[in-house]
Image (cartoon, rainbow, N blue to C red; front, side):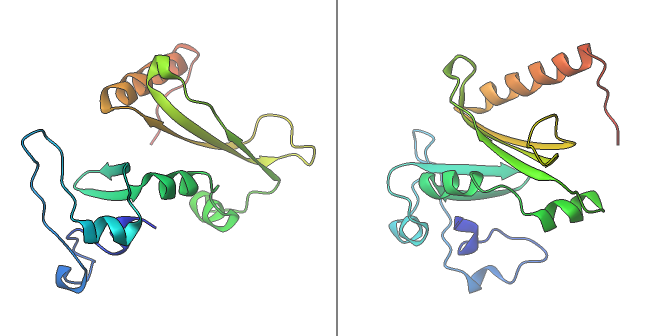
Length: 157
């Protein structure tokens, strides 16, 4: 369970912040955030935490809960809704290994819509990776985009 479940950030659609056990924290002199014990205990953070964010929102997870979450492939209903149609076929789940040379700590990939034998190229593939820092992730994304463009891929909206 993510910390957001108990400690929501302000959002126009969220109930008032006072309904949640919340704490405002300031960075310490060394740039770290000191999360109060009550918040750490609420989501099971012992030593390591994972901070996930996009834009002005973030979620703080215990390392164990984050690993459990990313090992769960999206459900068929979620995928069908995202595509706007049912996707038939098998699902293949692959857990990758860390690649320290590029700063990748882990990777999971789910292939959806495979034929009955589970082989071939899936029509839909979703991958998630974790990196040691923002710079490593940014470099990897830029490298991947460049490689895909070199073989003819283009951006569509």
